[in-house]
Length: 495
Image (cartoon, rainbow, N blue to C red; front, top):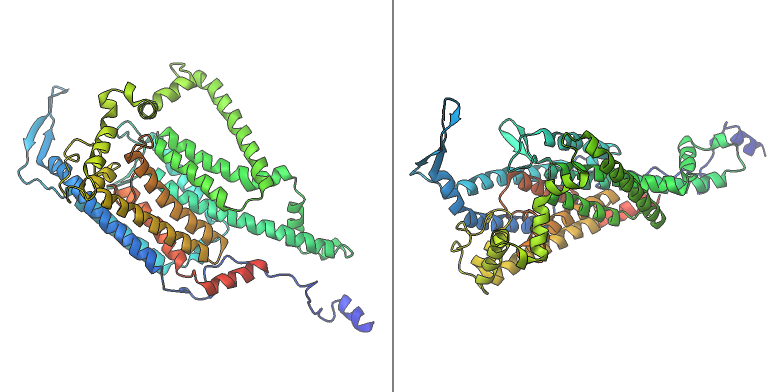
C-alpha cells in the first residue's frame, strides 16, 4: 500500500507497461539509420539501366526526326526592317553553314544536365529529409504563384505557358505535375498518421476514463477532439481540401490555356487519391462536397462573367473560343469524314508513317514523313517516326521499355519503407508511363490529338528536365528501399 501511494504521488517512478506506456511517435523515415546522412548508396540498378536505355534510344530517334527541321532552321535567316515605321517584307538570307544537329545538340545538352542533377540529387539527398510535415504545403505555395504569373507572360503560339527568367525559360505546368505528386503524397501521409493517432488516443482516453482528464497527454486530447469531429469535417480534411487545392492548379493551367497539362494533372490527382487508402466514407462524402462546391462556383462564374467582360461575352462563348482548337481536334477524331484535309493532315500523316514502316521499318534516318509532311515529328509525334524507321519491332521496343520502367518503379514503391515513399514512387512511375502511353494512343489514332509529349523521346527542355527530376526522386527513394527497412517500417508504423 505504501509503495502504491508513493507511486501515485509520483515520488517513485511508475514502471510503464503495455497499458500505460505511450507508444513512440512514428517518424517518417527513409532508412534504418536516422543519424547517418547517407543510409544507403545503392540506387536501383534495374531502374537506372532502363532509364539510360530510354534516354539513349530517345536521343537517337530525336536526332533522326529533327535533323531536317534543324537544317532548315539554321540555313535560312529571315531579316525584317522598318521604313518610316512600316515593316518591310522579310528578306530571306541563305546561310551556307547550316547545322542539321542544332536541335539534337540542344536536346542533348539539356538532357545531360538534367540527368547529372537528378543523379547528384538522388545520391546525396536522403529521402527522409523530404518527408517533413509542412514541406508539401511549402511546395504547393511555391508553385502556385508561378502558375498565376503565366497568364501575364508573353504569348507564344497563342498560349501563355512560359515564364522567361533571363536566358532561361520554362513551363510551370510541367513543374506542377511533379510538384502535385509530392504535395499529395506528403498530405496523405500526414493525414494517415493523424488518423492513426486519433485511433490510438481514443483507446488511451477510454482506458484512462477513471482518471482525471488532465492526466491525458495534450497530444492525445487534440487527437481525441479530432476523432470526435463530424464525418463531414473528416471528409473535408481527407478529400475535399486536397482535391480543391489540386483543382485550383488545374484551373490555372486551363487559363493559359494548356488542356493536355490540365488533363494530366486531373489524372494524377485521381491516381494519388486511389493510392492513398482514404476511408470509403470520406471518399463518398468528400466527393459530394467537391461536386457541390464546383457546381456552385461554375454557376457563379457563368452568371457574373458577362458583367466583368468588356464585350459582355457569355461564359460559354468564352470557353468555346478559348478551347476552339481542342473542340476541333475532338470533332476531327469523332467524325474524320466531315473534317477537312487540313484538319486531318497531322493524324493522317502519323498513320501513314506507322503503316509504311512494316515489320522492321525503312531503316534508321530514312523517314519520309519527317521531311515537312508530319508536323512536330521531333516533338509530340515522334512515335510515328519510330514506327516508320524501325517498324513494328521499334514500336514494341519502346512499349517494352516503358513497361519495364513501370515494373521497376512499382517494385521500388512496393519495397519502400514509409507511406510517403510508397506514394511518391508509385505516383512518379505512373506519371511517366501514363504520359508515354497517352502519347502513343494519340499517334495510333485511338485518342484525339492533345499535345502530350513522349517522355525522354520528344524534344523539349522543360519537359525533359522534370521527367528526369521524377526519375531522380525514384532513385532517391530506391536507395533505402530494402526488405530489412520494410520490416523496420512496419514495426515503426504499428507502434
